[in-house]
Every structure is written in structure tokens, then in C-alpha cells.
Length: 312
Image 1 (cartoon, rainbow, N blue to C red):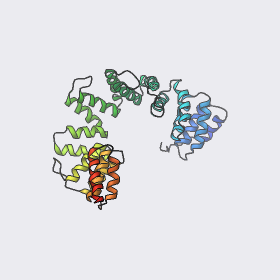
Image 2: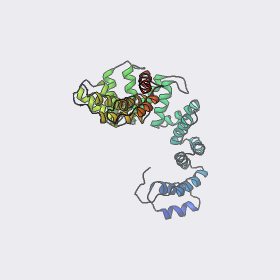
Image 3: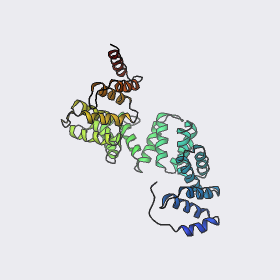
Image 4: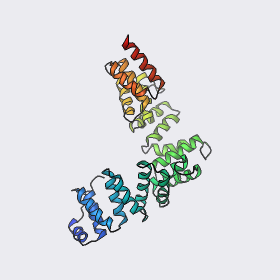
């Protein structure tokens, strides 16, 4: 969290905190964490003081600090303490840690639900997703949609995009491409990369499709990055607005590869094999193709040919 410039009278807070005022201890901890000059050690000290007095918000904030420091066990302890007092942010964070760090999807559901019922939009989306996929709970896509709608009313972009996908696929609701497009647009204009990519796929005007594709790629959508890279590689897009540019193609392949996109690994291997956008390097090509080979038959075939050529 970036430091806040607004000044707090730390001397007054310190005096109150030292005599055991939990609210003052919490306010002082926030001051040290969020206002310049920042002092995270002192912030942690005063969060702990307030947390041990049972102040739920302090327990939740201390959990955040410990989680950021990599102390998952300590974070879980304080999230649990705050969550049992009904602190919604702690309930959501506890659920996330149970699900992601410990693989306890079923144990996470009651906490997601508790936070969702208090209006926590991230929890509403996480609960909706669990219900949609049947992860940790019985599958119920109709209820999933209700939670997505609740989060969407608060402007949650992932919820908006998920509703769009349900209308696109006809999950629970009747498939309706135009309704899907309207929902995708709501998220896309606010920078949601997956929605932007969907808009590029659904746009009937090639130039508009390209614009959405570029937005999605720029915002980190790996499929969009690969598609845009291929357009540059081949110098071909229905809009007619992209000329062949191997360097740009490689740039987008690398962007997708950094996110673990295995098809991008294959495409980078081809670039090094053929010397497109980079100097030709068969050893480097083999490195990339080996990474992609377990995932793609095309990569295995290219690697076999390259290895066979090297032996001859």
C-alpha cells in the first residue's frame, strides 16, 4: 500500500496507545504503515498490541502484514481470530489462504460465504466460482450467477466478465450473444483484459477487433498476446493494419511466455530456429522447444527435426 501523505498526530496517538487504548494502537499502527515516514516494524508492533486485546480490525491488518512477509501460518492465526468476530476482510482472506496455500477448498467455503453475505465482493466472486465449478461445494450454477450479480452491482470486473461468459455459453441463462457482448463491454472499457479479448473475438468490424486485441494484449491477456504476435509474424490481420514485424511478434510471444503460455514457448523456439526477430540459434531454439514439447505435438516434431538435422 502506498504511503498516505495526510498527517496524523502520532504524539497524541502514541500517548493513548501506551496506556492501552486499542483504538489508538490500531490508528497508530495504520499511521506507521500507510503514512510517511513509513515504519513497518512499529506498525507491526502496534497492530500486535491491539490484536492481542481482541480488536478484529487490528487482527485482520496484522494478518495482512504477516501474509505479505511470507508468514502464512501466523497470518492464518490472526485471520481466524478476526474472522470469528465477523470481520469480512479477514473472513475472505482466511478463505483464500485455506484454498490457495493449504488446498482446503471445502474448509474455505463457509468463510467465503460469511464474507459474501456481508457484501464483500471478492468473496462473492470466489463463492460464485466455487459454486459454478463445484470446487469444495456442490455445483450450483444458478446460485453462482446470483453471487456474480451481487458482486457486479458493486462494479466487480471479474463478476461482470463471468456473467458475460455465462450469457455467451448459455450456462443457466439462455445463450444470448448480444447480452454477453453488453456485459463484456462493461468490463472491457474499464480495463478487464479477458473482457477486452472477448470483445476482439465478438467484434464484427476488423479494425475495432484489432483495437480490442491490442488492449487485451497490453493488459496482459496471454491468448491475446499470442494472437497479436502471430498477426505481426505473418503480417496478416483482417483489418489490413498490421505489417510483418518479427521483432514485435517476438515481443508479444515473450510477454505470453513469461506468464507460462506453453504455445508461446513453441513459437519463440521457431523464431530462434529460423532467425526471425533474433539471430538464428539452434541451441536456444532447442531450449524453447524442449520446454514446449511436453505440451504440444508440434513442438515435439519441430524438436525432433532440429535434433536430427544437428546429428547429420
